Image 1 (cartoon, helix red, strand yellow):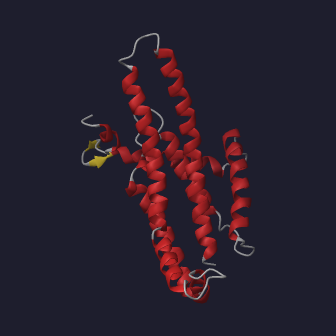
Image 2 (tube, rainbow, N blue to C red; image 1 turned 30 degrees about the vertical axis):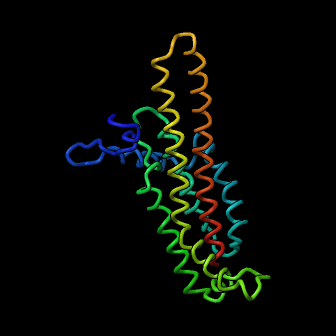
Image 3 (cartoon, helix red, strand yellow; image 1 turned 90 degrees about the vertical axis):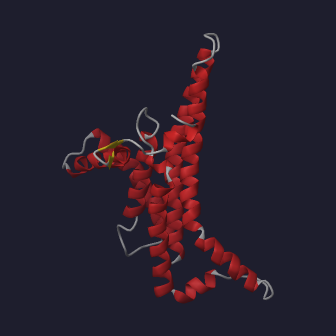
Length: 224
């Protein structure tokens, strides 16, 4: 490791194939279990949070006719959460800590929402640029502010996810490097702190996937 940030460099290659990114495909191994007639306990455990997410996303989207619209957001949440949790295991690459991965998820969603909104609901999209109750003098400034906020949405989604993953991994790496040089008396305390941070990172991994999916759902509800 040449520097602290080299742990985020996907440089493991074999025959010109980047093997680090293969960890993102591990979640595909869980798909065949969902096609069994009698579901096992693992799939029953997965179905409970997915049912709750389906109800919440339906409330945010307010879609009563188009059933199955929430599947894309539930799939997005599950993929981000699985990749975040896998990155906490030793020697497994965290793909969601790179802007390549996060921006590849945020930019197509935002672009499709914007294209659909401006093509189908043009008047509604124009009305979103000026909030209700805005004075006439401030209307040009509000249009500029709302336009900029709409443009930077995919960037904020991507940076939020990548920055949270990088921050947690850097803290764990720093503590892991300093623990090796400490005395035996302080070692149990440092290990306990690392275990607490690891539990916190597990919660952050789930929360970041939830935040990404909820914000994408809110952006979709604005254009309809």
